[in-house]
Image: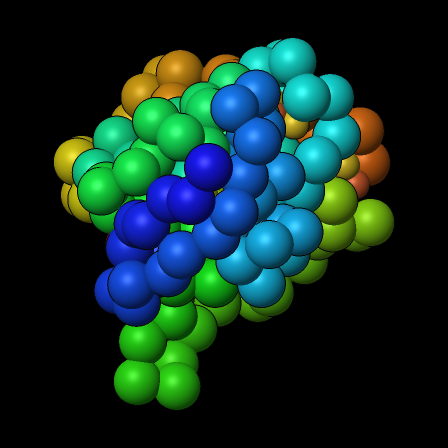
Length: 150
Ligand code: FES
Ligand code: FES
C-alpha cells in the first residue's frame, strides 16, 4: 500500500506492507535513519519520534497509521542550520557515548521542554523513563537536559 505523510515538514510518500512499522518506513524507505532500531518492542525509546506532536515509539506505530499525519524525527529538530538546544547540550555535557540511544533521548527531552520549560529532576526522570542507555549511567544525560532547560 502507498502512504503519504509529512516528515519534518516535508510531504513524503512510500510503499509499505500492511504490517510495516513507522520506524522501518522512516529508516528504510523515507530516508530518515536518525531514529534507531534497538528493541522493536517499545522497551528502549531509541526510536522515539513525535507523531502529531505526541511522543511515540515509532516501532510500535504502523506506517499505515501515520498516513496523513505529521511526524518529527531527530533530524527535524534542528532549524536554520542550528542544532536544537537539547542537541547542543548533549554535545556540551558529553552525554553521548556509543550514541545509539541518543536520538531517542533528544526527541524525548525536546518534547519535555516543549511541554515543561523548567522541569525538576523528578519530571526529567519521568519524561525519560521510557528511554534506556547502556553506556552513560544517565548522569550526563540529566545534566544535558538541565542545561538545555536553563
Ligand atoms: S526500538 Fe522502539 S522502543 Fe526500542
Ligand atoms: S550512549 Fe550508548 S546506549 Fe546510550
